[in-house]
Length: 133
Image (cartoon, rainbow, N blue to C red; front, side, top):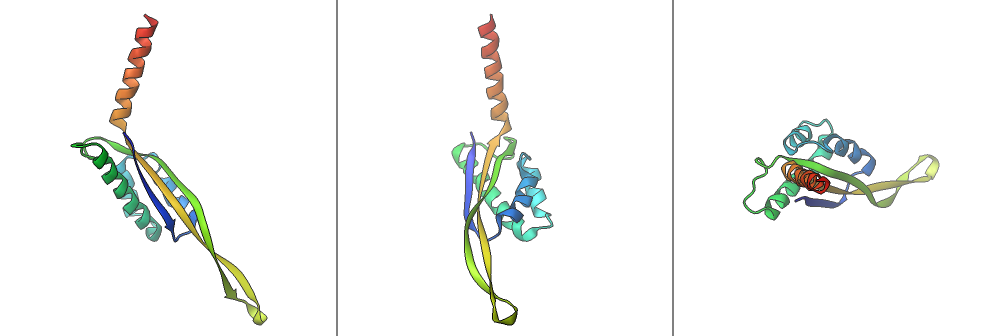
């Protein structure tokens, strides 16, 4: 069973946030947390690390009695979408003004257990074998 965590209106540009998200996509949760903890883009990784911990807690809440350490969780899907942009003016030479956009983003993380996926795949394979007989 998968669990979803979303962060809306994160005050960082989506293009730079995708660089952090791309590193953890498809990784085991333990490895992903380590990558985020020691990431060079620490300011960006803090938001993603907090969101990943929230996704793990959501998964534990959905699966009563199951622990994240025992169930071999991994980051199934990680997406960064653009949100709105604040338009501001910045001073320029000779009394002019330039427009500046402060971009925001939305982050979506989906965490799933690989043990459950393996058992589902085994069941499907067994059904296919029985159908062949």
